[in-house]
Length: 427
Ligand code: AMP
Image (tube, rainbow, N blue to C red):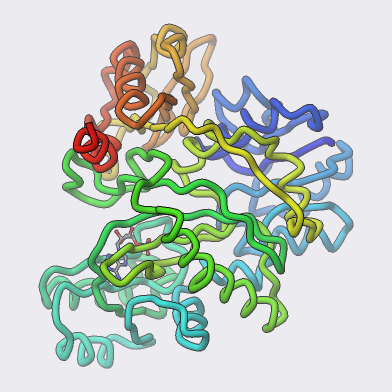
């Protein structure tokens, strides 16, 4: 099969790496890709917002399957547009992508179907939102309804912070995404990322993972797109996985089908595991970044037939195998991230870092320049490693980090700490 992958981050590098290893893969392109992806796929300069250009490339190049990485093209209906002209595409339709594109849509779906999630209200004007906030306990969470590149969520510790967040949203800090606001109760517990492949009817769980959203060690400082991740997530026991499927994922898949928007693609449930079980924080309609990087390292089965089965509605009899090893990814970001940062600094030492046992380095934001690798984004590298447990995988990943010569970059030094603490307690 000739495959076109859409996206340019570490998630796409991991997907490209996995798909490039499949005997089913013929030619593999990635648009727009990055310097690391270029080692696995032919990078093509396509504007993902220009669906006609993507379709034109697919027709001219004989693409058999399009795999969509990021949420923006999914919410803009790229799968609908590709399928309408007979090009197979992995990912949800525009109507199904509302599970990520509108937090209010998802909250209403949860309420209608008894899916456990934080109590909430939706607002289209600041006055009523503030009146409601004044009656609620803190902490409380204020969210822009639409896509805000992971930035539209404020977990407010004080009423003033919450009120300011409402003003930010309605003042346009997140553009059209903030025209509606969801205010929801604060959930206590441990977070986990849970992924399923869905084919409209069936949902096949992938492995679990945990990511680290805060920029600083000890989970401190501002939120980011994710500074690292590890898999498996110890909090996702077999019983918790079962409950998540029965109480959250399967009711969602049934509800989407019933409303005429069957969900196909990866469903990524952000969960809070509390004393009374799993609650849905939010859905994403694509693979997580950086969780995908650790999932692909642990996946033993071929990814390509699984994606095709999800697209074709054939997951009912499908099975996936996983390596028992744990995996860790450490994100190296440009100094200043998630605030302002510089682009263009030179990264060296990637070859010797990749040679560390169990290590695989995925590129999140790089550019090749005359044989050199340059930083070209906020999150720049994903230094990943596998090991018998998270402790070993983490040690290998940081050994590789030490070998990378990039003065313009930084990383957290404690990725996987929750799992490592549990492993130490077990002895
Ligand atoms: P989201 O973009 O909705 O995943 O939110 C980003 C982060 O904010 C989550 O990963 C949580 O850490 C936090 N968060 C969101 N909603 C809640 C909530 N209701 N209670 C506690 N933390 C939350």
